[in-house]
Amino acid sequence: MPTPIHTVAASKGLNWVTQSLDVAGRRPGLVLSAMLLGLFLLVVLSFLAAIPGAVLVAMDGSEHSLGLPFNASWVLMALPVLVLIFAQPVLFAGLLHVLREVDRGRPVGVTGILAGLNGGQARALASIGLVQVLSSALNLLFTRWFGGADYLVQYGNYMASMMKGVIIAPPVPEHGGLLFVSGLALGFFAFTAQMYAIAQVQFQRREPLSAVIASLRASVVNVLPLTVAGLILAVGLFVGIIVLALAGTLLVMIAAFIAKALGRLIALLLFLFAIALVFTLMFGGIYLSWRDMFSDEQPPATEPPQQVQAEM
Image (cartoon, rainbow, N blue to C red; front, top):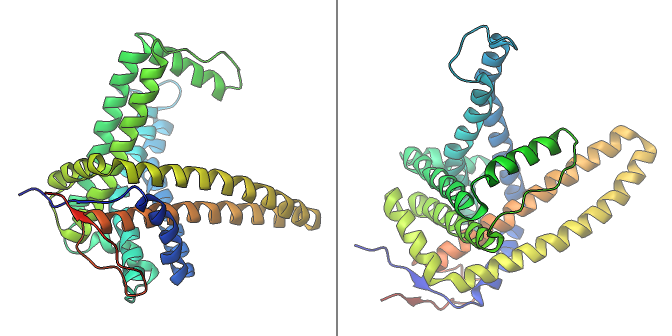
C-alpha cells in the first residue's frame, strides 16, 4: 500500500524555515547542544575509523614493506567516509527526535540524539546511507557523460595541484549546463530521499526501501514548497554568514588584542555556533516538512491549524 503523502502549498516553504526557529526557541540551549553533540560524535566516529588506516599506512611505509595489493592510504580515506555514510542516518534520526519532542512539549534531554539506536531501528536507519552511495555513483556517471572522457582525470589533477598550492586553470566540461542541472537535481532528490526516509523509519517505523520511494514521490509532488524552503534557507544562510563574519571578525580582533588565545577561542566558539545554527534550521525544516507531508499529527495548540490536502 503506497504511503499517504500530503500536498502542501508553495508558501509552506517559508513557514518551515521560520517555524524551525520558533521550535528551537522553545528550548534553545537543548537544541543547540544536541546539534553540537551530534556533530562532535560524527567527528569522533570518523577519527576512530581513520585509526586502522593510519596504522596500516605507518606499517606499510614509503617502501610498501607489507606488500599489499592496494595502496594503504585508500583504507585511511575510505573507512571514515563509509562510517560517516552509515552513521549519519542514525544520528540524524536522533536530531529529528529531539526537535519533535521539543515541538510536542515533551521532556527530552541532549542524549535524545541517540534515539536512533533505540527500538531496533539502527540497522534500518543505517541502510538509508546506501542512498548516498547510489547518489555518488550516479554523480560520477553524469560527470563522465556530460563532462567528457578526460574530465574526471583533469579535475583530479586540478584538485591535486590546488592542494599543493599550484594554481592552474580548472578543466572545462563539454556540457557544463547539463552537468550543473544534473548535479543540482541529483543532489536535491538524494537529500530529500535520505532525510524524509530517516524521519519515516524513525517516527513511523516504515521499511527503508518503501520510505525512500515515498520520499522521492513527496519530493516530486511538493517540489515547489521544497524549492522555496531551499532558496530561503540558502539566501538566509548567505546573509547570516556575512553578518556573522563581520561581527565575528571585529570581536576576534578585539579579543586577540587582549590575548591571542582568547581570540582563537572566540573564533572557534563562533564557528561552532554557526554550524549549530545551520543544523538547527536544516533539521527543523526537515522535521516540520515531514510533519506536513507525511504525518497526520496535529501541530501544537499554540500554532494555527495547518491545511493540507491528501493526495488521492
